[in-house]
Length: 575
Image (cartoon, rainbow, N blue to C red; front, top):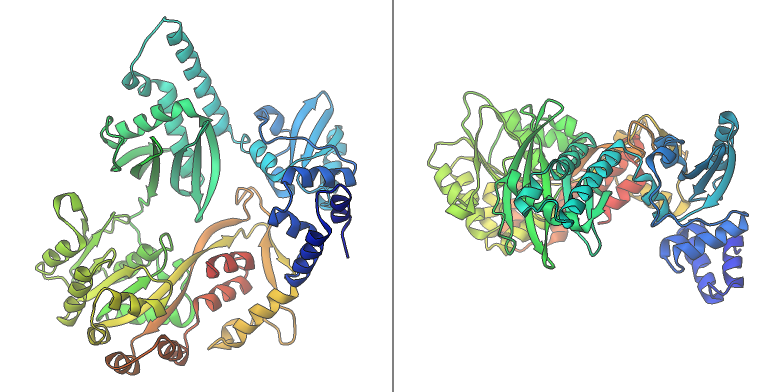
């Protein structure tokens, strides 16, 4: 059955009958709302869609995509309320307040804003706007942006003076001026306060985009006038002790700053892009206290396997997963648990991210020939008990690690593979003989990171029937059903959670991350298989026989526990 919105779009000639039928069929198949499916698939421009939707509810459209809403107007409604209900104040004249909604069919939001206006004594004028317009407006909420704006105004005033001939300065003078230094300082401090792991400074055609990676997801936090880009990059290069006049090749450096009494270390990477330079700053952890495996999120038999490794460290342990999946943090946790006065532990890292007292940590430096392979050769002459190599990425490092394990050393490393089943083929691609893999490798781990739900605004949700069936099928194959007994009542619907966004989580609904993982042990039957003919199917059967949860099952269990959302589980496990 067609919705009012789809009928209106057909009437206006914005949607064809055939397209409408396809939308309805697909929405039914995926058990989702047709209007939301239409919006997600971008069959019609969002502006046209929102305008028609607004007409159905008798609300005018306002375009906020290029409009800078002043900070003092925005804060008429608190940021958490705006982000929770997807609405924003964009104009205020006396007691007349104009508010733009992203979802005019959200009666919960309309009821809340009407109640607020009545309590405050305002006359309310509702409008509709696009998601992009809403995001453009709310980005100005933070006082941080107000300070950035003041710094830019100050810099613009100085540029105006120089253009009039009152003062002329070179680039080196510009980057040392208070406004540029202030902007860079504010960008870094805001990232630290927001809990970001990375700062991306990217040049565009007309503007410079500042993005923060928070809990693994990139968010646009700020856009700046493009003419500031060179000055900002130059300022960062000065702080990182990089070559100012070199823009043709990538450069790497480090910055150490103090924010609110805390020492913050940043790893700086520059990259030439389309006649300009992009900068990424990784905010490195400064804590010396290692995180336990339980704190990282390991549970069940996977946790038992890792604890067994720590109790009797032998052979090679490899952790796989994509970039940013927490592999190095897991290795650091294992190394921290092994750290004793009687144990000589040496690590080869690029970069050294976690400084652990009592451990000899070596920073890889290819510029002077200190690679993982050459470093490992030197380390093995240092009488180590435990060696951690940041990454195995070539035949030389792989064979050195294998032979070191065969001579009595405990080796830890990471490797890029999709899952535990992909690690052995990855090693054979590096020309490591299968019989050596079977003799030396002890345990394989594959992991991802899921965002944790904000516990302050978490609520139960109903999931589509088709999705519930998919989840139930995964749970039916759990090797140990007891792990979900207290979360799943017999014969009842599965209960999942979602967070709406609040002050505690900055309106995102998520705060923090947890590991989801799967483990595979090299049992005698696997070793025998590797010395002869074997297939991935044989390894998969052995993993099932070992009674270990798959990565997806681990993630679903955490969703049932209310630690994460099902949307986050699907995002991570379907990559």
